Image (cartoon, rainbow, N blue to C red):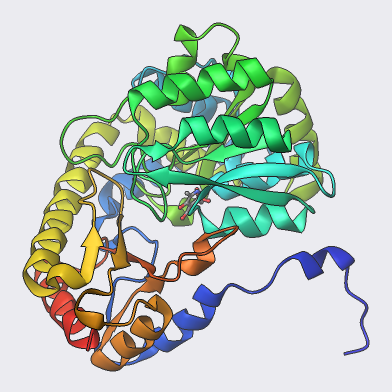
Length: 398
Ligand SMILES: Cc1ncc(COP(=O)(O)O)c(C=O)c1O
């Protein structure tokens, strides 16, 4: 086609994962591939009544254009929701975004010039890698272990690269499922202050814990580290706990950053759907969230346990993994035991032939991909399907 597209598109490519998703239509396939919550768990009755309340009491506002910063009652509702998790944030201290994905896009737009460096975890959320690259950023990968990003190495990378931002998913990350320890969280906040670098805390999974609550968010902990609050940009989302289709997320950050993000949002989508915002506000006001959270935690915990047990039983030493304490994912690695291949890409193809799908790990690395890794989501298959799917995985190991 003789259309000359923008140069910036050369920085990104359609994700390898999307290509794999095309194969998922095969009948009978069990999918551990998606990053979606289970649609069977959406609180349809609760949302129905929230929609009805919104249209009965505030139809004008719910169907009209609205403020770019977000719908007042929802900003208040989110502020209270955050307070329930130890994060003090006034309604004016956050803006509502069209999913937390838009918050990430706005941060990139506001912060990044061509060639700027951003430190991300290796591995990290693929859409963030693509989004930051679209704005010309150079991504530097910080190693993680079972306690999250390795803070000593992170500091070395900060000194070496002088990044504009550090992007972390400290709580049940996608794809790693990992959890940053309390000690490391405090260290990250100290690093932010010491090196005057913005830390983006992406937190769509923090509410999905299975046993004990995770350590407080970086934003909550910033009260303990003087000066650190200004260096945290917190992205929240209702997608994984309520409904991704609502497209309600938010960004809490320093007022000057928020003002610039709001300006960019104005040019982009003017505001997040007022209808969705009024619905979400009514939902939060109705006090249904605690019961919804209890239900999703219970179901995902059961599935995560089932997947862990099935993996131990079926794949033995061929695969190593850590049992996740929350979120939606197992992050696993082909060990090569018994002289088997360590290529997760080839394994994914054989798995599809056996009737089970998952995502190879390499695309989740901004640098130095580990091709032996892969991600398994336990969110959308029930326990019986998980057990059958893991059997098929074992058969695909060869
Ligand atoms: C780590 C992470 N951040 C952000 C998002 C975007 O979520 P949403 O835009 O639906 O809030 C996702 C979705 O999968 C995610 O996994």
